[in-house]
Length: 265
Image (cartoon, rainbow, N blue to C red; front, top):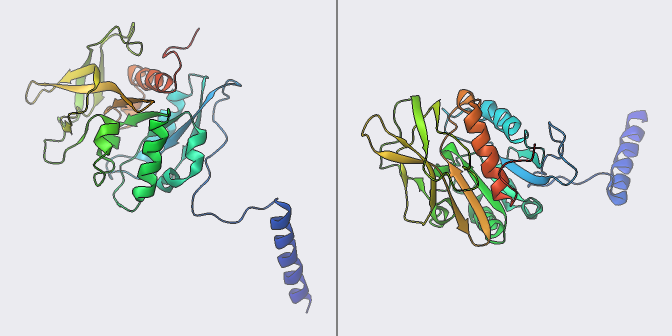
């Protein structure tokens, strides 16, 4: 009898909490994480870092905190991490200034056409997009993706050089992202698998040690009213910890949200 009364009291408290708005019902779309690891400036641009699935060789649970830390060195950016691709279906996506795509989805139903169209609408309407490493391979089932990404993974092509050290050469030093940015060495995967005819502005390349051809390592493009920055760098923690790689993604993200790529000292 006492147990029954306690259960009845708990049930009543639950529904009262719902009615008063102090408890939210469960939702199939996750909420974005609000707390940033590093305090951002009061007027910082909210940036969604979306991850949660990738090729098994891409350890997103290890690389995401490192990428986040690199981006948060620019206190004009407030980084919020979500580890569920279904978030792309949420109208909350449109509360952000940009999305950093750090995933490769394998289930065409996740996030599905609803999420894909919401992402496209977000960027077309002025949101920024930053594509990281194997994000080029996301949405293989979505023909529009190459228009947004500029270049996309073509599984019929050779994937990449053997993992190792190579030089990234700056080819557009006048672009705001690359101004006073020297060429640099990185130990990473040199992707040779990007394909597409969408017009892009090439920022940096690297020459393959296998076929001696140059391949894009960073480029930008417009998509509707939005800005897109895309780099296939970032295979692992070591790559992201390379200072130049962190700076490249930091500048690319700032540019994508409409800020000067370099923060004032």
